[in-house]
Image (cartoon, rainbow, N blue to C red; front, side, top):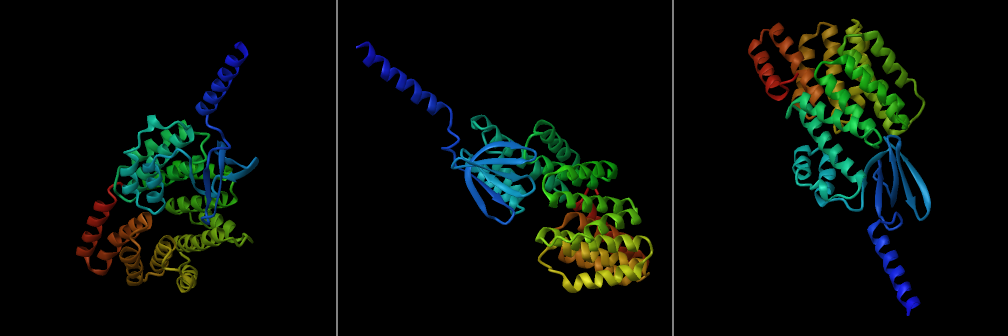
Length: 342
C-alpha cells in the first residue's frame, strides 16, 4: 500500500512543478526581421546585442537592429495591437492601447520590457511631432534605457534619446547618444550612427566635419537596401553641408540628381532632398528658388517633423526678404503651433 501511495504523490508533484514553470519548448514566440520574415520558437535569452531563439533544440541568434518586432507567447492583446499601431506610425492609438495593459498580470520580464519600451517610444515620437513635451519624453526614455540596459531595444532607445536631444537643441548630448550606436551589433546601425552624427554637425554649422561623415557612408561598397537608402540620405546631407560652405553650385548639381531619382513615397528622403535644394538655392542667392523648395517640404512632406520644422524656420527667414512679411508670420505661427519646443 505504501508503494502504491508514494508513486501517485511523486507524479502529482512532478506535474504540478511542470505546470508552474513554463517550458521553453512549449513557448511559441515569433521573431520578425526587417523584411517581415519570421521564425517561431522560444526566446531563451535577450541582451542589448539581440535575442536567442530555441527552435526545436537549435539555438538561433538575432541581432538587435535586424529585428523589427517580437511577438511573445503571453502577450496581452492590447500590447499586440500597440506594436502594430506603433510600427504603422499611429502612436496615439498605440499609446491608448498600452494604457489598458495590466502589467502586474504579466509573468514574463521580457514582455514587461516591451510594454515599457513601446510606451516610451510612442511618447518620444509624439513629442518629436509636436504632440508632447520633449523633456518629459526624454525622461521616460532615459528611465527605460537605465532600467533595461540588457534589453534588445537598448540601441533603439539610444537613437530616440539622440533624436530628442537634437530636437531640444542639445547637440553635444545628441552626438553622445548617436555615437553610442557605433557599438551596436548590426552593421547598418553602425553606419546609421555616422549619418546621424553628420546631421548633428549640420545643425552645428560644421560643414567640413559633416561632409567627412557623409563621405564615409558614400564610400561604402555594400549594396543592401538599407545602406543604399542611407547613402541617398547622406547625399542630401552632403548637399546641405556644401551649401553651408558656400559651394552652392555643387550642392545644386547634387540635389538635381537626387530629385531626378527620388521616390516621393519615402517622406524622409523626399523632405531632406527638398530642404537640401532650399539650402543650395540660398547659397546661390536664389531666394525664390529656396522658398519654392522649402514650400515643397512644407506642403508635401510635413509628416517628417524635423525636416518640416526646418523648412518652416527657413520660410520665416526668407519671406520678408522677398517682401512678404505676412507669409513669414503665417509660417512662424505654424512653427510655434506644431513644434512648440523648436
